[in-house]
Image: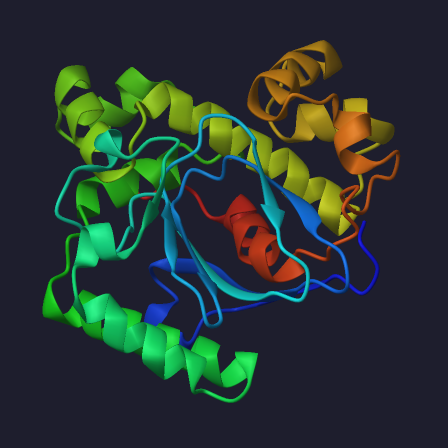
Length: 276
């Protein structure tokens, strides 16, 4: 890790809580920093202060970004199925990083100026959230059936994709088509991603494994058949084994960042039955 690099997550503003999972401020010090982005099921906006904002499409594998030295980035991570208004379907943006202006046009230029003149990263983040709230109010594109499908596919209540489609009064092909449009991936791929996020959430929280211990216990609690199943999925999604990803510790990732603002609401869904 580069010296003086810092990353602080926080909950979104109340008006965005239904569509945004977390927001953050990241600062690099005197050296560049290699940031590993992992699939979350959602999309993100990365906004370097004084630079051009990037839209990060749904990831199906890890992506390493080198952030230059002395850079401050504010970011927004959206819930799956709750992307901001876009001119194209999300399955056209899978594993892509685009200049936000390519999607939103010239109104991004004014936002860049406002963010650059904000004075502090915290004020810049407030400006960005206010702009996003305006965008959602101007043109909401959330598919509420897909949002219900996302809730049903969370790892805490294992269910088959066909059963989710039936409960939503959709055919399997209709659910797949709507999920590709609103999430970017098929329901099955989304389910795998959410299960992996569930494992990371449990690890971050240091959650007890109901009488079992270590990675194997957390794997079962997150919905994997066993630790070998988790190992295969972790390699597929991140290119690393769980222990390498976590740096040998079960209460944090190897990057040293604290992600409770992102994973606390994720874990809160464990006690909520799916509303389908």
